[in-house]
Length: 113
Image (tube, rainbow, N blue to C red; front, side, top):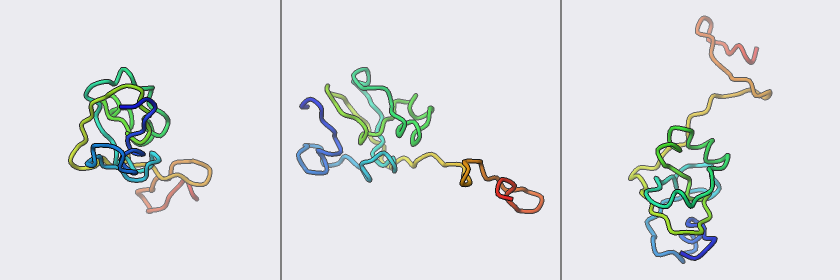
């Protein structure tokens, strides 16, 4: 692997020998490129805010990373699940960033009243 390489960029322009790498947006928004790092994780930087947002602590602790967010300086070994991971579900928020929750008694959203 050449230094300072992004796997998704290489796969997208067909310069990388692993055409089966699944990816989507290439910007850390969809989580389709999520892979578990089998070997070489010690050579990777800490997860960025996009990885933390899309994967959450549990998946990060299991070794998952968003490949589109990784710039490699060393070889790594990846395992990509057969089915893509979905981004974590988000709690809807209003324009002020307050969580919108439905009031079970009357079906309204108290944060927006």
